[in-house]
Structure formats: structure tokens, C-alpha cells
Image 1 (spheres, rainbow, N blue to C red):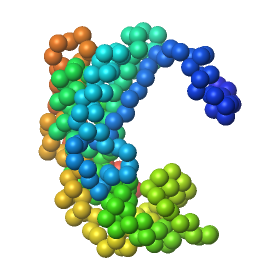
Image 2: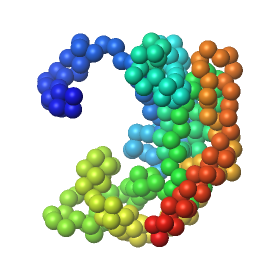
Image 3: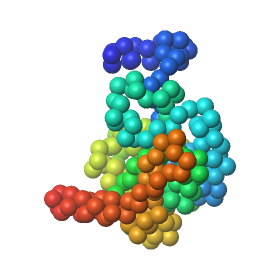
Image 4: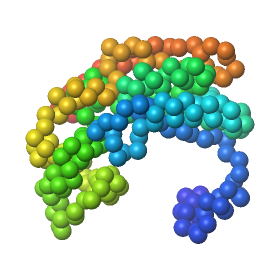
Length: 249
């Protein structure tokens, strides 16, 4: 199957061919990140932000043309055969605070279940996710500073990075975990910023005290979504993170 998929990927007109041989899918997934009407140097150029109007329009489109399902429905029907026609799973990555402030209320309004994938490392805004840090430095200090940091971890010919697309698309994936850490440390030094202070001021991410995050555990057939507060999940997530950090010293 993997070989067939790889072969199909390199065929000219592959998308049209895929549409012809596979017009029906048992499940579609739509991923969102950040929903905000305000631009920010921490996200500008990353293509992760949707405005409130855009997000609400997406929800109207999905509820009109598709059948939003819960993660529980997907797990219980792994073969996809028992899911409703045109099933769609709405997900959020990165745990931006805007999922509480904007996205979750709108999901409730339209009766759309959603799955929130939380990166415990950035809860409580004590540090920045690498992509947000890089984006901030590039927007506020320019690519020259990003290149200065990159030059400290490039062993061979120094690659001049001209855009965030090149940073995220080719440069970062080429680094080892050790190299990535060294690059981010060099980036902070080159920009002359304090990461923790930036993170606290930006308040991009969810906090353990923010118990408003809702897990929408309803199907579309229910008139009012039943929320389940997951502050306890946050506490357990933080506990697991600290245990892992202790074991890894």
C-alpha cells in the first residue's frame, strides 16, 4: 500500500486520478490552530491564524455539507464503515488560548465536536513553542538575526535562509534535536530577548487555571452540546510532564 501511494504521488495529474479512483472517503479531518482577529508577530507568516469570521464560516460550511463526528465515534468505528456519510473530525493543534476564547464557544454554537491536542510543554506560558519564537524574531528583528543563529549550527556551507517557509520547510527538519536546541538558544542570544518574559507577555497558550476549555462530547443530533471541563486533565498533564522531566534529568 505504501509503495502504491508513493508511486501515485509522483504521477502527473495525481490529484485528479485520486479523485477518480477514490471519490468517497470514510473520514475527513480538518485541523485548525489559532482563531483571532488580531495579527501577531508570534504567528505572522506561519499561516496558522483564522479570523473569527473565517472560522465561523468554516463551521457553517462543515455543518451544511458534512457530518461532524466525535473522536469517540472514530475510535469506535476504526474501519470507517459505520461512520455517517461525509464524516469530518475537527481538531485543534498547539493549544492556543484562542481555542477557549473563540473556538470552543463557536463549536458549541454550531454543535460541532472538536478535539484539542495540547502540548504540555507550553502550558502556563513559561516558554515559547519553537515556531512562535522563530516567527517573532523574524518579524521583529529580521531574517538576518535568524541567519546569524543558523550559522552557529551549520557545519557545512552556510545556507542563507530567505523566508520562514525555508526555515520550517527545510532548515529545521535537517537538524538533530541537539542541533535544534542549540539553534533556538543561539536565536535568543542573537535577538537579545528573554524567552520566558516574551511567553508571559504574549500569553499565547492555555493555562492550568483556565478551566473554561471544553471538550465537546456530543453528536450533531443533540440540540445542546454537553461540555466536560478538563481542568483535571490539565493537572494530570502537568504532573506527567514533571514526572517525565525528572526521569530524563
